[in-house]
Amino acid sequence: MKGVRLFDYDRLSRIMHKSGADVVLAHTKPNLEYITDFEWMRGFDKSNFLNEVGSAYVVSFAGLPQDEAKGPFYVAASTETGYPEHYNCWIKDVRYWGPVFHVQGRRQQMDAAETPIARLAQVLKEKGLDRGKIAVEWRQIELVYYEQMRELLPHARIVDAEPILTELRMFKSDEEVRRLREVCRITSEVMDTVYRTAAYEGMTEWDLESYLDVAFAQRKSRHVWTDVAFGPKGATFVGPTDTRLERGHILRLDIGGWSEGYVCDMSRSMAWGGKPVEAARRAHAAIYRMNRELAAAVRPGAVPSDLYRMVMRIFEDEGYASLTPQAGHSLGRTAHEPPFLVAGYDRPLEKGMVVVIEPTMRIQGAGSFNIEDTTLVTDEGCEVLSTTPRELEAYL
Image 1: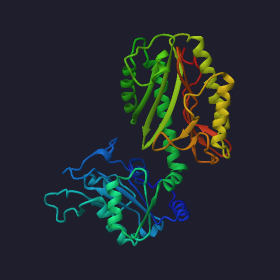
Image 2 (image 1 turned 60 degrees about the horizontal axis):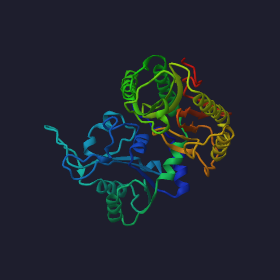
Image 3 (image 1 turned 120 degrees about the vertical axis):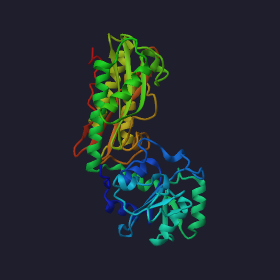
Image 4 (image 1 turned 120 degrees about the horizontal axis):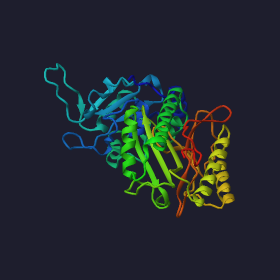
């Protein structure tokens, strides 16, 4: 697979110019993989992984100067040797740090710095960026690396990169939309097979978890999380347990599928094997109403906080309370990204944003009720990307 640049560099430069940042340094897994479009040790998070000699936790930095002519760069741990090159990372300036990986017979061995910040400082000085405003992922950078930056880059001003990267990732490119459509197609298909063929009387929630691992793998994708609840148990907990599926249960399933770096987050609460209790029927009807009305309201210009208040009014009108103070969120590389449908989030939606609609409630004696769909904001409304049936008795 050839790595591609998933964002418009001119747009990034404009965002950075507005904030005054001369260079953005991303180091967290979602942002690194978004920027580079390749994955080191598939599915593995390097942040808690010590290097080969135990001297430091593995960290890498993708650097994006405001002036593209200065050249984007990638400072990688030596543990990653060969990954950027063989996975066709679009960033060609790759520098390594950490213990040298020696290749017998190679004329020129690896050039590696002792620490990531030493290598980073070297590259920034080469590019004339060491005296500018450097944006880092403020909430997640390790203190030891921040202190080393202050020591090795004494003339730089360190600022927060999160607003820049959030703004960049909030609008999905055509390639991102293609990937999101595909992962939603896969996840919808897997969800559908659960209700149609995979679920059986007496299976445990752990059994279903195991099925999902295989079902996604068969579709050349990944199963990344499960919130599951059979029947009344869902009122208190939606993680997998030894609870067994019975006829008439609400089979509540929230699953995350992954494909090509992007996730789909969708939920269904459906009757399985027999008619559910009246409390379940009423609760599902209320959630289904919210799902339909919220999907109809997602469009350019809609204000997330207004959408949140609309859903809360429906909860009150139906005589229920929301499980959490939110009605939805966005997603992309991860399951929770801005914009969020919450009180106080007043930036209007725009074409190219993704909105996950997710009114949720739990009812003692009945279970967990959630119809969650991933939507793409279009010119005049939204396209619902998750397609599994939503009606309570669709599979009876």
